[in-house]
Length: 376
Image 1 (spheres, rainbow, N blue to C red):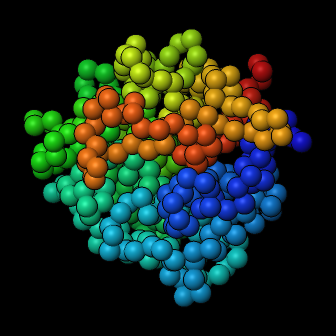
Image 2 (spheres, rainbow, N blue to C red):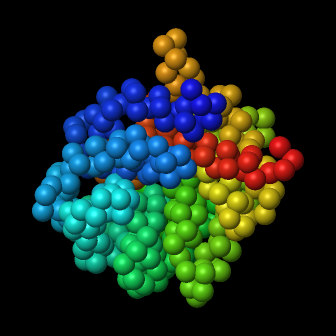
């Protein structure tokens, strides 16, 4: 077997989970953002290796949902849920490789949702119809990279403006000037009990929420034209946020805490998914020149921490990622109040795609950096 972690982890995952949507903790087989996380990682592995087994894995998992007329099994546009956009990222690859128009039609269906999706007074996407006037960091990752890729692929440049506006708007409302970190969510209406009555922000800095956001930025920049008027602002925002993230890295392990700035508090723990997302985004940002090389050092420390503390091999040789927060949100039923006690109370899982996928992508970035670094 390859000595590369990206290949070892991918092979192990495919063998254990032939269908992502049938993983044990998914309540039913459905179109969802967790599937999209894993398939996005496999696209990166496929582009790196050219091994068509990875492409076939993506196609098999996507074809469970894409009907002959381009409609999507279990997807409902009128739900107006930004999470439902993320799995659509694999449609570009399938269209590119097969020319099958049903993939184009499915993409257009998702973009149609974005055209009519409810928005804040400044044009920010509501996280879901059931969460009115709320923007969450998670949602930027679910929508923005797909829309930026769509803009590039189909000459729909208006989406570049929309995506950069979304990224900048999220930072405008969620940034804490003291730490430089971004709060998990923002409620324009300030009606939610989790929302600060002055700022509208939720009370804590959740690691994975910030991880989603920086991954969104670094992936959007792959498609955003170099002369786009807001490109510089997006890169500048990324740089100052990367500095804030580096400041809260736990120095001994190289990992990041579930609640980023409260590492000493009882019950907090070093969490794998947010850590993997930061490693991926910082390493890619340094490779692309958006960040200085010092951030590659931060990423390497984080990657080593993941290997040491979170990756495990079972007796059968299968590889796993531990210490992944299962989920965290705001509001809903039962009500999630955004408190410290809430964030540390959610279950911790093994192999959840929200941690496994960014770890595979982090592996690819670290392998890329070791190849390009003459001192290693």
